[in-house]
Image 1: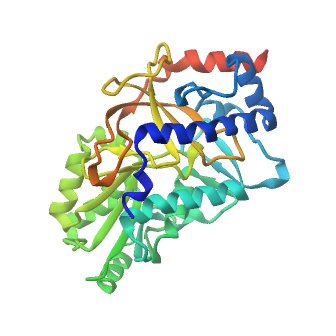
Image 2: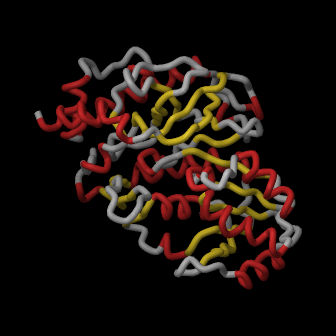
Length: 352
């Protein structure tokens, strides 16, 4: 199961991805007016010869424009990115087909580390984040998407984001000795679950923890991924810990951590690293902006997105844990002032 989602060598993978990405570029250009104007202005062809030549848009575009490639009545839900109060949020239009593709892709990745059965699941969040399925934040969508992999869900926090200590103690006691699944966003997992394992000496050695996001806040506390894993193992016996990298603009296509600590995109997605100044693709070992490509989104033009995150491809086709393809290390966020070039060019093409 583990090898199947990362089983295609990089060269073969790029050949397979290229055809699908070209088809998606044509589809979105024909059905999303804004995306069509961008590609017509900035690219002279829709059939790219290489994956790195596929037209891309900056992730900030989803904050300033509502980009949809399906009729309004076909939109099943609108997902929004996480953000601080008053900040601009991405709004992503999802139809039934894209929802189904997201679910299948996520299932293929997460099942590789969780297994085929649905274990009891601890959610390190509040149930309030999934109460409105028609308008989901990235956080709520992540929780809702992961909940399908577990049963007998226990939410660690109440509606006021207060710790439900007795509920956790009772739930852990109920499932002692049984495999369990734990999911949450990294900062919440550290702030609430890790703190409690130190106080209460919970035995979580039978658990699998899947977590994502929030490293920026932890870095201010000098908590590296290695420290994160070692701390949980020491305090609770929890050793099967998997981080993943993903975003609301490309839900379903996550880069999942392997035992080497690096992140691997699945067969239906890939990562390109670009120079922040020239946007030229960079070779492995060079740090730059992360671009994500994915075959999942059909209801909105999110198949090729340039993020505001910095990363580096450490190596390719090393085969760690049976995983082929690119091994990604995420470094952090690029200062927004340094990414204006791409966004300004795109904005100009829309205004033309």
